[in-house]
Image (cartoon, rainbow, N blue to C red; front, top):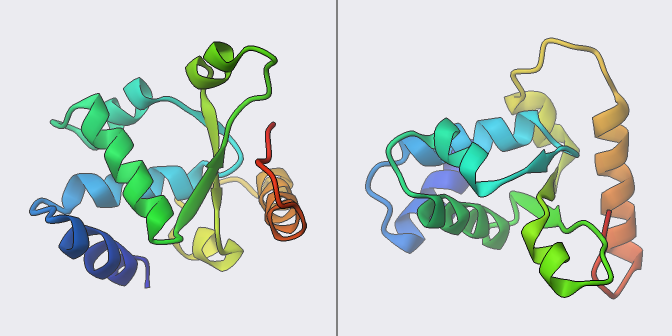
Length: 128
């Protein structure tokens, strides 16, 4: 299912020829739901692609409703943009099917569920 979303809704739509970095990013992000991420860290995960391209891939996955992200709350807009974002899966079942996590820690899944509920009932932007 995730492969279909990545290939059909992301790679084909945006003309991505090499899908392997996109898949590595998706697996990493879905394994690490409710945890902060940065472009530089994701670049080391994806391989031989640049940080702007990695961030574009994250945006493409958001457009395909695979993941969502939220910014850290700060009164200064520059701090909000500079600080790492947290990633959340749009479907909690996707996390279970793709995740490579070896722990039984249900905390991130609970936080992901709470984010989805806030997203459902809140009209504005959600911060962590």
